[in-house]
Image 1 (tube, rainbow, N blue to C red):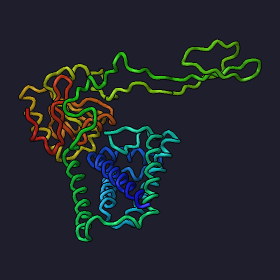
Image 2: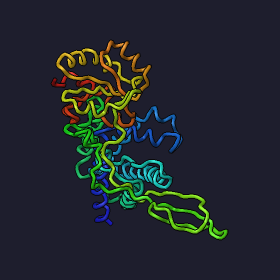
Image 3: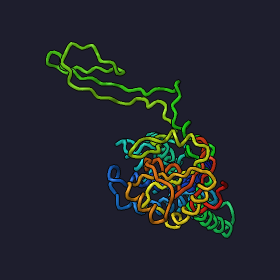
Image 4: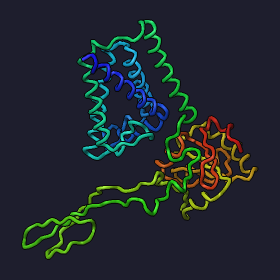
Amino acid sequence: MKYLVNISRLFVGILFIISGLIKLNDPLGFSYKLQEYFSEEVLNMAFLEHYALMIAVLVVVYEVVLGVFLLIGYKPKFTVWSLLLMIVFFSFLTFYSAYFDKVKDCGCFGDAIKFTPWQSFTKDIVLLFFILILFFGVKHLKPVFNKLTVTFLALLSFILSFWFGYHVLMHLPTIDFRPYHIGANIEEGMTIPEDAPKPVVEYTWKFKVDGKDKIVTTDGSYPSVDGEFVSVDTKVIDEGYQPPIVDFSIETNDGDYTQQFLEKDKLIMIVSYNLDKMELEGARKLKAFSDKALKMGYTVIGLSASGDEAKQRLKERYHLNFDFYLCDEKALKAVVRSNPGILVVHKGTVMQKVHWNDIDDLKL
């Protein structure tokens, strides 16, 4: 039993730390995932959406420190009970989203590793198995150092986790796992290769033949059935190749300008998924920065999912001399974890990307 407990201790502790740090690297992204869970379409707890970021930070910090607590042997009973309650809760969420097909990706490992809903649930069940070993073998969980050292390490892990979460919120994720990272080409990210796997769709046809229902399944072709057609249902068996970037566009009511702007060699995109939620300090910095960029020959545009009234209101309030174009809100949240955020783009390739706090670090 002691041997199994030690194996479980290492496996669970390391996995919780890795999973927690990946999400702590991008707590804003995890908060978007929580908002998806809290929405009316999933758990119908919309009142929690306003607290999603605070909950996200607390959950991922707790996840990291529990992993550290387990490895160093700090307060074993508290740690094991906390791990058990957390994995039971996450198992419920992943099962719910998988069974009812509500959330396509649990966000367990942020944007670094994508799991299908059933893969996420399977992962949680495996973790539950190892945590139950720890639960029943808690007496074998001994501190690896003396009491003072273990307490110090536990406190240090807590402080460093909160500091790291605060740091990336005030700047940007230390490691960018999204397809808009520095060096990525946006146009290439939207392209589907000619030899890419195609979606596989199953068609279930229903006919009336001699007064009885007859079901025929095909890959899309209309079946040769001597009867009356009733209905057809489709089911996606394999989604095929999905490009890393979807729903990104640069549009106005007059048309789509995506290709035109992505061909420019000196483009600055100022991104705000919602202008009414833009940080005021960030908004105040845009005027001087954009004026400087325009004088140096850059094309400056804004991207937002907000309506025309909000765009005009912001331009007038801060005397901005560039136009805002329309883009999907979810796509903009993925582009940069800052509101506003600034990208320097050369022929579709992201050369620089900063949080508004670091706007002075951009090299034009």
